[in-house]
Image 1 (cartoon, rainbow, N blue to C red):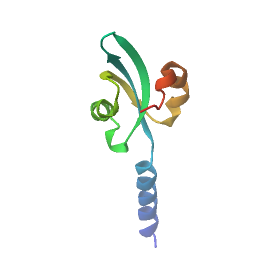
Image 2 (image 1 turned 180 degrees about the vertical axis):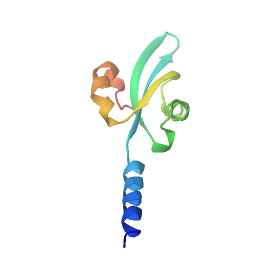
Image 3 (image 1 turned 30 degrees about the horizontal axis):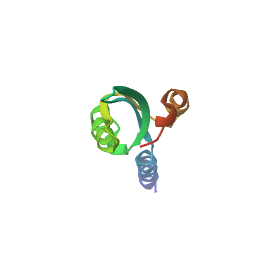
Image 4 (image 1 turned 90 degrees about the horizontal axis):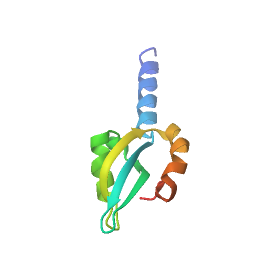
Length: 93
């Protein structure tokens, strides 16, 4: 019985971390005329690094927007502090 309890705990933690949300904030540009925007996007758990998130973000941007930089990746605790700065590009894509 004592071996089952640690296994249950490990499986519970693994399931909880697999469902953890991941977000990235980024900078993008549009040419002719030059326009810039800062945005926040949810990315898959498996893309929760700057390099992996860059690939996801670049693939989702539309309307001629091109990714310039992934500023950071973070969990849900960082959403509120970025909401105002991202404006219309907060969780848009």
